[in-house]
Image (cartoon, rainbow, N blue to C red):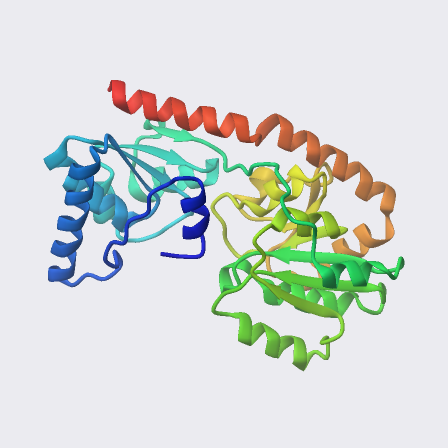
Length: 322
């Protein structure tokens, strides 16, 4: 299920409903295995590509009966459940979305480094929308500076840090407008925080937006104040549009963003430092333009969609031949 099912159908990609993989009820797990086994048999599936630890566990079991190959992509850093993950990945080709994620797999789960392939995340540089009407109206005032954050609204993403930094920046940049794009379980708490800080007219929640790239084009720069990451897509999306970003200095973020080259780094959870970086990008337009040019070069050289597709094709061919 999910919001992308209609998009998959438009592309001719078949979608199957399976039971909840996170639940550990033994009868539900048996049902899941049977459902997966029937799909694999009926569709003559050669490769199972999983993106979740329990999904990899199920793939390991059903692949022994159907002799299909397994690929697993680790998107984040994890801790715990060591036996589960090592069992699940024993016969899988493992991909990590960044060097920090690869390091986590080696150090926490004792996987062999030279058997892990790093394939950086990418986005298709294809803007399909025409922008957001609220942002268009805010742009009518030429003095406004629009800083946005684009993410799931969870504690991991540190949107509360962004909100507090906007509050701290108000005195020095009175024309700063904060834009929050995305949805999640923390939305109500974050809206309450905005109200407490009396920022209702300064910070705007846009919710989920189907075309983030068109939104990025309407912003002056983006902020990602995560507390932890794997290899985030947001900086890559931002770079693809020739824009720059301020990110927390943590593994994953600092793998994509080079400080003072294609963006700016700030110490995780440091509201004062983030505020200073926001002021810098608001007041120094020449610096911002320089970072934007380097950001576009970074996307073209390291994160292009073409390289991403070729890398995964190489993985699929390798597991088939193996």
